[in-house]
Image (cartoon, rainbow, N blue to C red):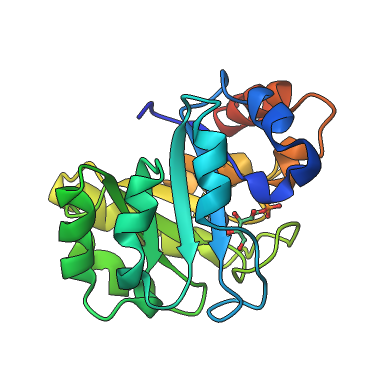
Length: 220
Ligand code: DX5
Ligand code: ZN
């Protein structure tokens, strides 16, 4: 991954024109963020494997899959088989996170672990260097368009410090409420892979919105 990237979240796309919206961003970033919600772990249901299978046929962009589902262990292989490149599960849902990470890697995929705003950030420290991505939720998962929780800055800083101390290359990703006005503060705290839904897909030109977000992150 580059030093800084945006992962547009298709939760904010127009599902009636899903491929049109994916085409609008596929040349501006490495990853497309795909939110899978099961109505159990979070109070919302989005979409699942058949949709991912369908869009996989029409784009080469990497799929960064955010599983907001209980019992992720049941579905890892299915998500790998339908063409996901990264599989990120919630620490809060996993019975045996280490086993799940090994399984994702054995399937040849990049592994990610995510935590909710109420889970202490230290809970992910044991997975530094083991996973490719640590995803800090910066809103309560389930819905797009919420405001960034500013208490996340401190959590990101703590994680940045722990990763740097270990010299690990685990990427810090953030998800929720990222926009042009706050991306610099989040970048400065240490995040590098920014999931952005409404900030990208509500824009008239989603590709341009991605470039603007990147530029705002490193403004001096
Ligand atoms: C929320 C999802 C996010 C969501 C972000 O549970 O995980 O990926 O799409 O949306 P915005 O960027 O609009 O906050
Ligand atoms: Zn997400």
